[in-house]
Length: 277
Ligand code: SAM
Image (cartoon, rainbow, N blue to C red; front, side):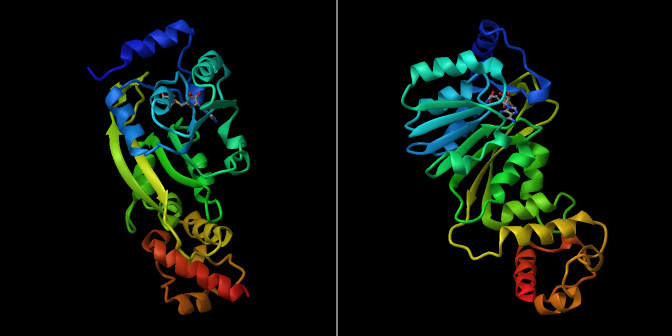
């Protein structure tokens, strides 16, 4: 039996908790999946940030490992008694903050490198991930082990010239390696979500020379801002001569955003930065 279903129900009953839609609460009870998430995070010896510990089954599994520290960030104050109990049980290793993670600057808060493990609430998954992807190098995060909606994982891993390939794919694959760990069926959660989830692992590529985040984001956003239009049209807002830029980078402006590879976007931004000087 791989289910923690009964123990999760007992926790929810004990603390009189009900899953709230507005906080994207779907609680994971499948032991195998929880173990797989923790194992793939290689959390031993690391400073771990867990976003949204909720009833704490995943948190407990992380705390059983030889982690250096676990910092949980939870927005829903009704989980306070559970978090206080965890603090009592692991006074040296566990800390928590009650706040919206999107309002917390992890790099300012944590003075060392950290990794993130989270079964992310669906409503903040993309903005949270992007906030980490666009940090200037060298980034302080070492590894992200995230459970997201399958559709989001597919977009992050999408290949050039496909329908799912977009801004999120380019920003993810630009400076990171992304790997699918497993899929999770809705029945592994209480309440079951309407969609399949995917666990992904993301690590920054080491020592790569890249243009600035600001300029890269600008080019990618302009290009995908008018996805159906040619690059000639979508990049026309740039303050430089885009015909000269295209010649210099050997990019065909009659293509569309989804036809350019991640390397094409890097070249285009490096060229753009040269023309700005
Ligand atoms: N970790 C638990 C699990 O795996 O069963 C709960 C996961 S549930 C999908 C998402 C959790 O994130 C909930 O506990 C929810 O309250 C919390 N959450 C939602 N929005 C948040 C935010 N903006 N900042 C921090 N936590 C948030």
